[in-house]
Amino acid sequence: MAEGSALVLFSGGQDSTVCLAWALDRYARVETVGFAYGQRHAIELDQRPVILKEIAARFPAWAPRLADDHVLQLSTLGQISESSLTRDVAFEMSAAGLPNTFVPGRNLLFFTYAAALAYRRGIRTLVGGMCETDFSGYPDCRNDTLQSLAASLSLGMDTAFRIETPLMWIDKAASWVMAKSLGGDGLLDLIVQHTHTCYTSDRSTQHPWGVGCGTCPACVLREKGWEQWQTVRS
Ligand code: ZN
Image (tube, rainbow, N blue to C red; front, side, top):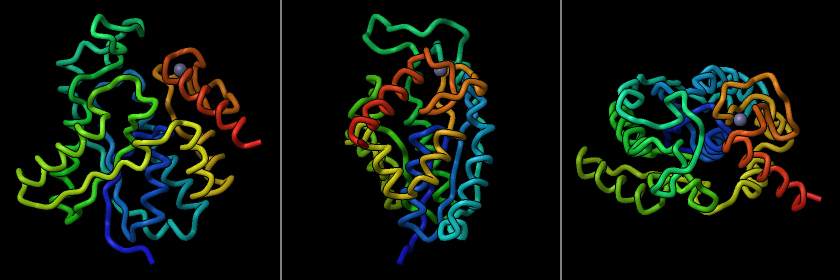
């Protein structure tokens, strides 16, 4: 019997959609939050209501658990960062060895805003799709970063927050396995058709693994995970 509530950081991408399904499987009431931060692929935000509607339609057991959706404006993040995710520059590696898609502090800000929202909504569990296993080198996706943030948020708001990251220790292939076990072929199909991962705004090219340009770092990672899953699957 599912009980309790959670707030899922839901971008409209593959990982956060799997996390949303994970939360719907466990919690009686699940709210979602997305952030408009000037991302180049703001088209992912357009996919959020589509995905929520599809989940409600395809999964009758989850539909009543899906509660309010929130979109917060964080345009200052785009203003202060030089990332290729918020500027029209080529995707490449920086001198620090990080892809220039890195938006410094992004997840710290996201969780801080999410916690402030959750506080008001009476929710104490925050869920995010960060992953240390095949992460792109983003230091704000690390488990240590997020668990120390959970401690800071709990102290700073005098409230016991938990940050749950169901994908933290698994790779992209295993995240497809998780999706399948949570929602079967219906969820797989939903992810392939409706989630947006591509750093460009390509929603016109359908591949077996999803929609996107097929060449940006996000598409390459997503395709690689799908291919790995095909070998595990058969
Ligand atoms: Zn792409």
